[in-house]
Length: 229
Image 1 (cartoon, one colour):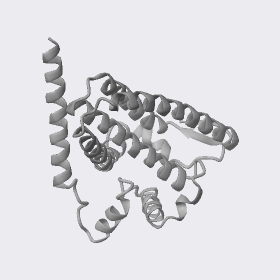
Image 2 (cartoon, one colour):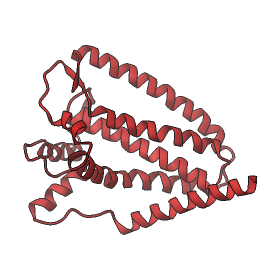
Image 3 (cartoon, one colour):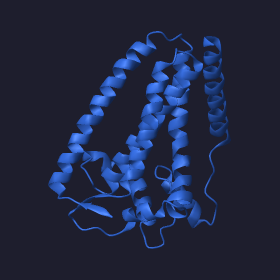
């Protein structure tokens, strides 16, 4: 299933979506500026750790979901539209809904974090949502823009590592549809497969950091609600 749409009209839609997204980000920035004014000093490094940890962890989550749910699971009937050959008039595909669902899941959580009193849990939760948003934006730019050429990305395609990512992703679109299932660590997946090795799992330090931060969110939010009661 795909939407028949000319490239020109598709470009206009992408432009309008970009304007809409920018307005949302501007509104979020307004809330964030007022929210962060009440932060204690230690919350800023905590926010940075939460943002970078979630951003890095998303690559491993996306790789797992891509393999387990999009190819070997119930979402294959949706994702298959991304692997089918399309005519020039097809601009959108059913697979795009997967990215929309991720945004629908993250944005309400981001606004919820803004409504909470500034504390370790709310700041960590906010960092999580922003890290996921940064990863998602980077994924769209590199995957849909650079690799698949669905919109212009300027000189990004000339960056050496971005080119390696695109070259690795080309292998995933061969008839076998094998590795890499991740994107930004796709070159490492291809190298491991060539040597007959298993792909490297999420680093222990990253998984433990995410576990600690998630526990911090749960404890702090529960304590905040307990204090209100």
